Length: 82
Length: 373
Image 1 (tube, rainbow over the protein chains, first blue to last red):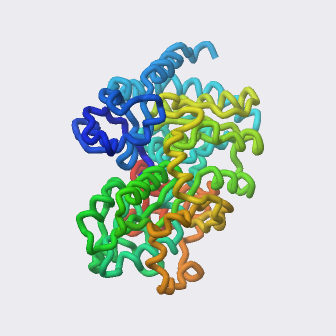
Image 2: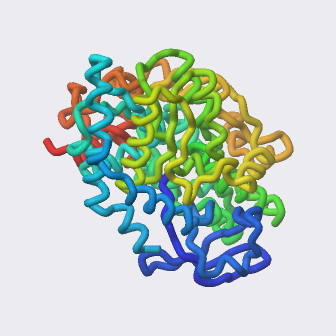
Image 3: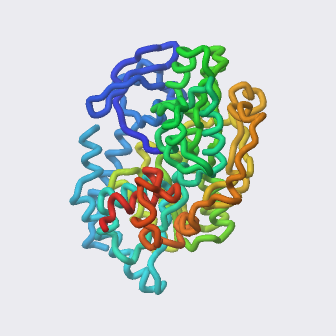
């Protein structure tokens, strides 16, 4: 129940009610994106973004740059130098 | 982005992190004369540890204490009893996430009530309860609102949406828990011996990394927030052990692609609009946890399903019917699930004796499904 899943916003279906179509592993369902509005984005600009879905709500944008940074830091770590 | 998911499952990175963890943890455990005691707060992490076989890879110098972070596991018997009483009312359609259905109440579980004819339906989202209420105006639709801070915003937002739309046949039976008071009760009670926390990724997505400051400042326990892929989890574990080795005590965020310092402000606003917090609450296995519960605000009482209990006397459940004492010991990290004499014998997912075996995220279910025989 507490788990979230990454999904891609593929379309806005109901602008007035902040509903969008999210796709994960080929499955699409309608979700609410209302809780992302404080992150400085218009609802329309969410199309194409990856989000973390939880019980029908997009709760966070997944930050690609942060993901790349984390993987980059890991790549620099060398167990032999510890 | 799916490439990124696979990157966070990359076995070469897993191997590298295991080596790094061992290099730092082994000498520290030698110095301390005992393994490092790490609590993973979230049931999702307990599952990740076993699902990906991390328990086989992590060195013996690190010992996990499975935390109380599965809301279904700490749901009190009274909550199930209330849910059953409401669900059995003829005008009610009772709705819930799937997880709580098999949790035993004092007389029956919701699943047993359903088998006996109650109209109980599993929903993916509380938003679906709004549609159900609209389509069934002659019925009372009740949603079983449980979970930690992750689930609360969705419930709060659904309630606010129903209020805006003038829906008057939807109510919420609220048994939410807030994570921070629960962790503080655990630390203040000195009930568990632990050296640091792997912080829950999705609660943190809502409350933000900064919310954990009392844990480092008042209780001097380091905490590193982790995601749920193997590389995420091991990276957080490595950062945590590095802190212990360097005698640092900080909040670190190893899941920054999802979790920010301040969290989701819209979600926090929805929670504080709908709920009063600081309610002392009784949780299964944890006894009374001061300030951990919430209740629906006075101005939204029309949406509170407790009104449907007004004339009903609750069964005298809690004093007479309890989970086995072993469950409490597992919840407090004093006993590993497979050290319980009932494990795999009298207690299985098909016939659970306690909630830790019922919930898909419970520590006992994780051991049962993934840890072999």
